[in-house]
Amino acid sequence: MPRHTIRRAVLAALVAALAPGLAAAQTAAPAPTQAPTQAPTEAQRRVGQLFELYATVNGAWVLDQRCRVLDREGRREYEWHLARLNIAMARQFGQKKLAPLQRAAAETAEDPKYDDCGAAPREIVGSAAALVRNADVALTKGAYDRATSYRDYVSVRYAGIEASRRVDARCGHVPDDVKDNIAAAHAWVAQRIETLWGTAHRQSLDRRAGDLAARDALKTCGTETAKAVHAAAGELRVLYGSLKADETLAE
Image 1 (cartoon, rainbow, N blue to C red):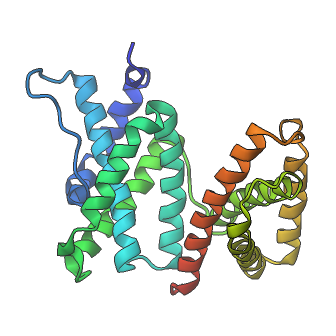
Image 2: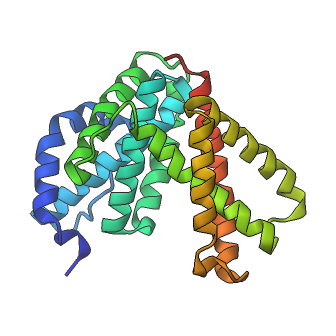
Image 3: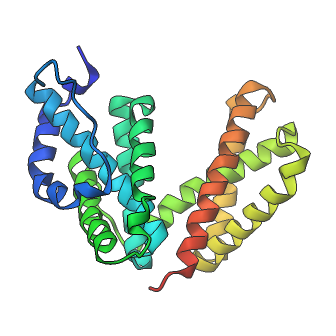
């Protein structure tokens, strides 16, 4: 049985709830195509609509990076919902199926017709912000809290990065030619977290990172520690870019 049939009722409810918003925002990203030789089943049609929604909100996210439509809090909420939606979709369909949609959405959002960052991009991003919120709520029941959601989202990512930094201090997986750049980015992220939420909070994350780094799976340097360290380096680049953008936005 195909994986996507497992949650048919959820998909049906999701598409029904989001259909108006999807129609308004769908120009931000291309939809997957259905083979013309075979009529899609109802379940396939719903999955196709869900993929279209997914491409739309990912494309609009890229578009916002260009045009800076959202204010700081709006961008934080969008990023939080999109991260949760990405996780839920990857669990359901697998990252290999989602990666082409993400690439196509990003390419569409980079179209020169959006260079002026005028009314069209603003309408797309605004519609997609509501769409990604509703999609996350429908799939994960996630409700964004201005006081805690973004803080906790960043904190979990930082703790994992810091844990991998400590592992690398023992194992030496990071090449010498990039160590300084990684250290500088890490220091800036740590300071930014401290600026936003206080020294005590950052120190609590460092303690959590110490516990993570001491797990049995990471005690022996080898393939698993190398994977963890290299994955954390990529995550650090993303988090650094996200917090840099956040710093420049109006409240």
